[in-house]
Image 1 (cartoon, one colour):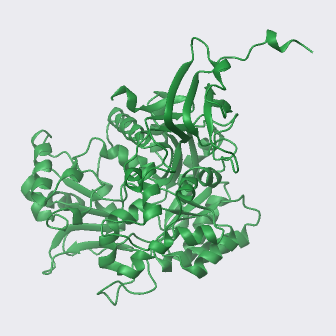
Image 2 (cartoon, one colour):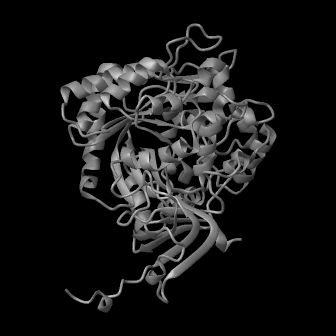
Image 3 (cartoon, one colour):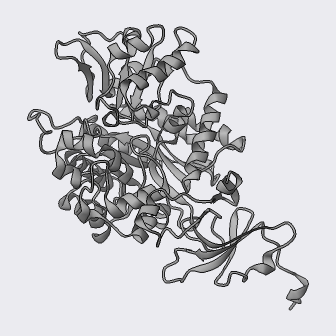
Length: 546
């Protein structure tokens, strides 16, 4: 045998010595050091000095004796593309009242050529404004009558000004499209509000943004996710053309997180409509870059808090039980077209009626397409899934993604529509876990704020903007961390690559100034990492600005 002393270990690119390295390997005690070479973890050690023989003059040594290392987190249901759009939009999420909201738009109008669209950020809630309501078209008209304005809140609600309504040809006689609402004042005049499928009446008019501006937006947004400890995003509504934009951002070295993209079928209502999307996805089937992959296709079965399909009527509206955006038979056929081409499907189902119908659809797809790979069909949200629905999903092997930050920010809105009991029962993480489901966690940004520890804190406390809702559904910190790491990697089929810190896995890790597993609950909520490393590359380093 050759003398191993003559073949010294190659040096590591990074060696981190810390107070604790939580590998998330079941039964393994905290380690104290981790070494990275290239895009992989090459060694971990229980002794802080146990990897010193990996250190060369070219090794970056990070010595943080009180810090904690964890895998980077996945956000398994979010909208990076929306975040990128908002990176350069009017930051109305900073407004405290409608006057300030309008002033921000007015300031942008003053430097925007007449006739050009003005868009706002989407991560705001009307109940955080002093008036506790959305602005109206008439109010937006006072900010500018020389520009069309799109005010977007989350992914289901728009408010536009009169200029935009005219461009879209929307009048008081315009019927609402199936699965959508056109807002009106009590006298029947338009108030500028568009909900669910009605948003497409206006949004298709927006010109595509300049590519360099959009790449800049993806750069800013993806690194902002990394700043909070997110290393991989599962973007659940990527327009097909934006796949190339993501690729160009990656090629330019400007993507701060990994992306698992779900191509958006939003606005589609006929099975044949998905064929063009599937044809466009075909070239992505053979791309295996660990930074950017197409996961599958995203469908919308119902609306959000204003349009989620419920079994019982909305509060104060005995004739309204939400909106269904697909007929079940048509959705079944559409999903079959996707899985028969070898892709996976995530479907938005928020209300309990939508979850019930989606399970009928998924069961039919599974019966007619035996042998589908595990986790080919996913419930996105499953907000009001009750015991019977959870049991069905688990028996069928269907995972669910939940989004506690969404509940945190929208609880008051939800109580107004659904009542406190139903809102308290949203996202029953405790039951999903105890009953044996594969459940993972995300944010649903821009409806909820993204961030690793705000999500963990929310699942542990069930706190919302209007206090604790559904305390019985709370889970432990370790369980919440798993939903963003080990379980998230299982969902996307990458457990052999990510989710734990072991030699051979991708070097996706975060360094925290204190241990999230043991710090005070108050400190946990706003805790951010000192360092985020994705594939051996630093995508966030707070130490550079401290």
